[in-house]
Image 1 (cartoon, rainbow, N blue to C red):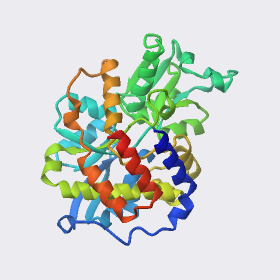
Image 2: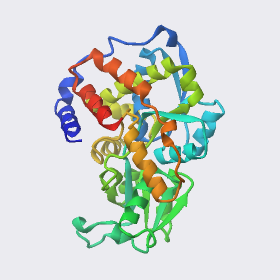
Image 3: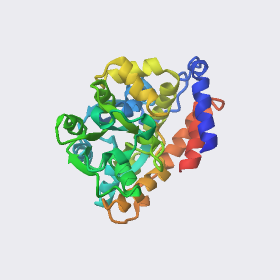
Length: 354
């Protein structure tokens, strides 16, 4: 990943200059997708910002798509809506998707949304008087951690605890959704919680302490989180529409990397968090919080973690993962601006993670 990291650094270095380059004057929309309607499921998290940017900046429209964003509070109800036809596509947690696939749901992961974006939040008394360089999971021996279901951050920290031999001395208390995990910190018997953005920054603003961020945990650096998924039959029936959808998200990623202030304004329309805190949660805690790549390698790593921690039994996960449409979409968009640093980064990233 060294070359990829160098490219990412170059993006940040030249972001201001890149922002001045017009891109939307050209579009690779196919005439057959003009006017196609898509209902898109999302969670009110900055990790789903690719949707928010694509919607607010007209990038879905540029690709001939009429999109409606539909909000959900957690993954299970969103999956039910997908399977009942109430939405056409959505961003679902990576570990939840793996459990869905293990249970035989006929869905396919074909793109990316959120990466990393979780924090292990503790009550301040847990680290009082302890130098930050000494903070570790060891501090949570005999403690209770609030988590959401099989949320991605939960799996990261449960796997980390197992590697340290702490799986029997740290107690993971499962809550229904992210809001419940966040509110669990107010309980006297909960010492910490694993929270995704924006609950991570909301907890810090209330005086709780971020012990660590999930994207920096050894073995899970910039790990996959929410992935784009749809019914396999929908992707097979109408691949042009979903390729156009991915092209819009790829352009949204470029906007996110080059227009941080405008991006935050777009995100605020869907995530009710103060601007300064939202920017910190979106741009500072992780090297990036969104990426449109399906990251097949990252999904397989998470599959291994779920098997290792006993959440799923072994099965052929490759049947539910596909990078074909993303590969076509990325090459088409990158061809329009072959010297663009953002697209160079995405091409390199895809090469390494396919």
